Length: 98
Image (tube, rainbow, N blue to C red; front, side, top):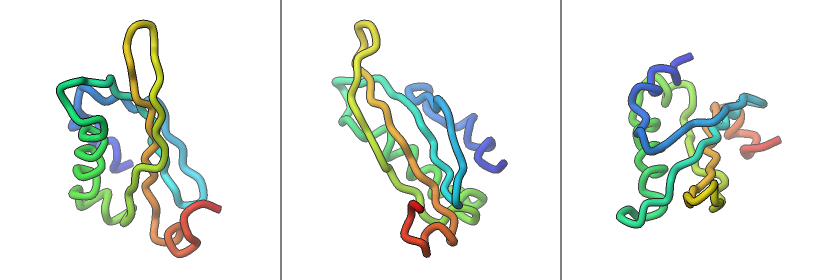
């Protein structure tokens, strides 16, 4: 899968914890540590931007968007859990989720 090519480019501050593919939608689930020096969604926005700029990924998934986020605490660390959806053209024409 072409997404594997991005794995070396993911910020060390982001961890993709799992992914799923159903009905033309590739969902990436991940976490990032809350950093008081950065705006809350900057890392996810930059990651989405890098996916959109990759010709191979854009060819397969013309629409990529942040779907869900939630704040959580693991031990003494505040984290953000997130879901990014990458939609194939056929999923976009059905309105996203089925």
